[in-house]
Amino acid sequence: MKAIQKMGLVLLMFTFILAACGEASNTPKNETANKGEKVKLTVWHNFAGDDLRAKTVRSFIEQFAQDNPNVELDAQAIPVDGYRQRLSTVAAANELPDLMFVYAGSHSAELYKAGLLQPITDVLNENKEWKDKFLPGAFDPFTFEKDEIYTAPLAMSATSILYYNKALFDKHGVKVPTTWDEMMTAIKVFNDNKVTPIALGNKAPWVAQSTILGSLADRVTGTEWFKNASQQKGAKFTDPEFVEALGYFKQLVDNKAFQDGANSIDNTQAEQYFIQGNAAMMVSGAWTLTNLAASATEDQMKDIEVTVLPAIPGGKGDANTISGGAGGGLALSKRTEGAAREAALKLIYTVSGPDAQKAIAESNSMVMYDTDIDESKVTSLYYKAFNLVKQTGITPVYDANLSAEAGEAINNGLQEIMMGGTPESVAKKLQDAQARSTAE
Image 1 (spheres, rainbow, N blue to C red):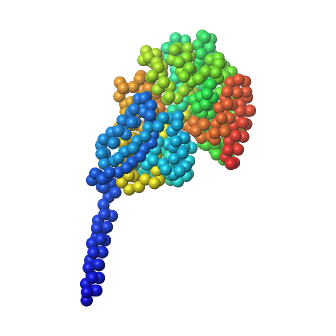
Image 2: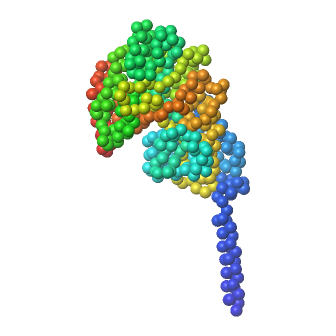
Image 3: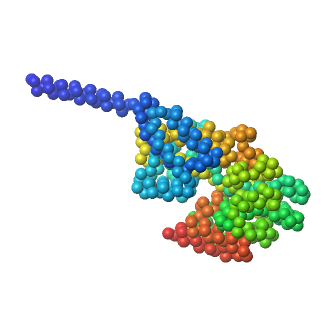
């Protein structure tokens, strides 16, 4: 009888234990955090500088820490130069922080392929109005599997804005070019009047490729052709349309569109050459907006307007486009779970949500997000470019989609064309490099 009583007591105690476990399992994961229980969260990013954009992003991280005292936040701002290497080191040891800034392209793709990331789709779907205001293509570099998004971009890379000095165009009676013939006419008139038509600093050889060729070639070949050629599926860089695209770049060279010695000065020198009124045009990226905001006067910038490169006759691509794409954003470690994951998603929304996107845009930095900005908070030139980009399509930047070897081949190839090389020779070197890379 005593044995039966003891067994009953044990069963009763076991029932209480099960009930208690049941109550615990029914508690929402994020509710624990809201009750004040400490949650540890680590985040690494490269917004370590003194520029306005870096300060803006850091301010939202700091605001999150203040608004969520239950989260023990370890936020590390790592300088850009050493950021990738440091992240690669911890990734190799499978010791990534909960959240980390990742770049669009191979950087984030490699982390995904290594099984180190998890999607953030649920926080985007929970905030549909936020998700729907990202510009077309914003999530493309971060959608590694169907319907699963791994990053919400904090920036936009726009690389082929056509900057032009309206005062010089008016002075010499030149029409802002919208067709290739008009571009050739403008180049001739400016040369005749001893004004450099287009400022270019191609000492670092990525400049001509990133700012001019990607956009120019897309107008000739169309985007689909480039994607196929990059994958070596049904298209090659020796195809006639790409040789033709290189031929248009050679036309610029042969017609003396660029200043003498363009291959021996850097992009910053070219920006100063342009803003000082020595050149009528410059094809450059959104980084020029930031650089000029820091170095040029408002009086110098008031005459500068922005547009897109002109259309190519018979081209397959859309002329109302700029090469570029989504910038980087915060990605979530595969190992982060439970309350830490809930806190991480909340931080992602804080740093890349509507308020943050607006603030980043008002720091004179392009965003991949449809927001309105206060004109008084930005430079006049940035405001013009911001509204231009919102109305244009985005096409691929070549070196962001090519292998490292192929990227080097086209960068050096454009320098060769500027020194007398032929489009056919450069096209073959690019094709051979990309074919080797895709065969590996």
